Image 1: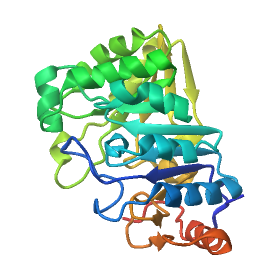
Image 2 (image 1 turned 120 degrees about the vertical axis):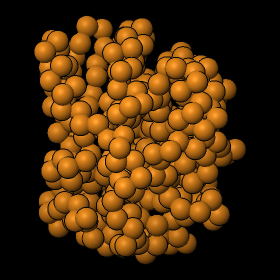
Image 3 (image 1 turned 90 degrees about the vertical axis):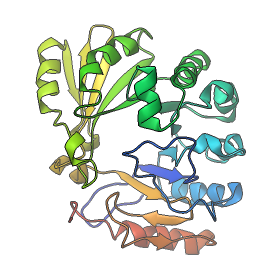
Image 4 (image 1 turned 90 degrees about the horizontal axis):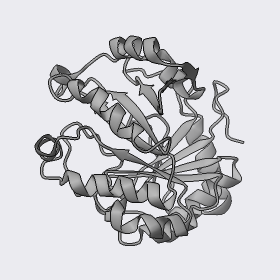
Length: 293
């Protein structure tokens, strides 16, 4: 079992398999670094097995965009040793790959979808085709990669007015799709688009039949008529770090103990067996109780 200095048990691994992407969303922080030196399938499998041995229960495959890798089904296969193997994707290539990924052992997907307006989608993603993302969502539901979670980053002046339309869209899938409203992480270049989700939460609370607080970062799930809406508030949320059960591996093989820091990475590339286990344990002890920005 992996436990950090503050008693937090690490149960979830996020592993970036590429920093490449077929879109270019303006707010994206892209977990990982250069597109060069991506981990091989074998290296990913070695890392996955080590974390599984240490008690990690779930793995999420991230990027960049994971589906740009031609060997993504193989990657899913070597990571199909956890209780849940999921993926975050923009959905553009998901329509063609959903069935193959399901067969390889993928449990479910998160799909980034900030708007249902075709022109706005093209602007936000700098060229993406909305119909491909929507087809990817439909195919994911069809093959059983459920629940599909729609990640909608709510942005002032861009898509705040579309939130209820997105709720209705998720409702159409009759329980197979959960909508995640994500508060934009306030950074110098996007501060004008930051929107506090507190007011939206008040509205959701009024109409929800039930409100559930998840252990993970104290996220609230609002059970509306025919759909679940979850609110993710990473910015200025003391619970975000306090209840963190995740650890990350970058696309070039470095453990990232904390989401918001790049100054304490631990390089595990090339390590195996006891050396890899030891490096993972060392990295976990570098975690902090909260973000010290």
